[in-house]
Length: 285
Image (cartoon, rainbow, N blue to C red; front, side):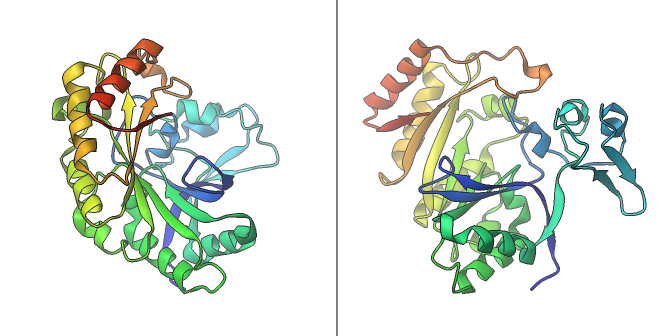
């Protein structure tokens, strides 16, 4: 197998909320958006060995390995208070580790009898497209794993050619649209939605778009025109694509975004009504 490695922030061995069936979910480190309401903000950045987490750790479970340019994490003494995640100026974590394709295949083989598929997520997993290509090829060529479905959970902020190398191996993509308006999208994420909109239509044309999700954020993307544009976008893709409306939740968001408020039930109903007018069957999460 290839010696190529990727930064993995965690693996959930059993999940029923990351696609159909019981799935293993592999979370990759690093993201190319900076969503205000991100509840996994420790997966956005990469560690730069600044040492802030080391000096903050109340159980002295972290230390800098300057030679190998990494943080050593003592799992035995760590209490997982997550203070290190709260203070990291890079929105990173001392817990992610480098894994090879072989490492991940071993994890999947160990749990293969209990899962129906795997989902790769992040961070933004598509930043690791070359690694994913090798991983997916190994899964599809392995007689014990080739029956597993493969889903990508992505923000879609990726050039088209990166999708091309993966589409032959995957069953589909679950993708978010944060806002239709470019200005609103930039306020919420810090970045343009141009590539995301292109990804949505490209994946739909290739019959690989499985779910399109919209997170409702009061005072940002909950006004009528924005929701109507999102409804038009959802209406433009295949009827077989699951359309979901997600309530923004404050759990786990960063202190600098504490001003965000969760949508009230009447705001959810207002959005649902607009989607209903567009004859869309929306799943509310």
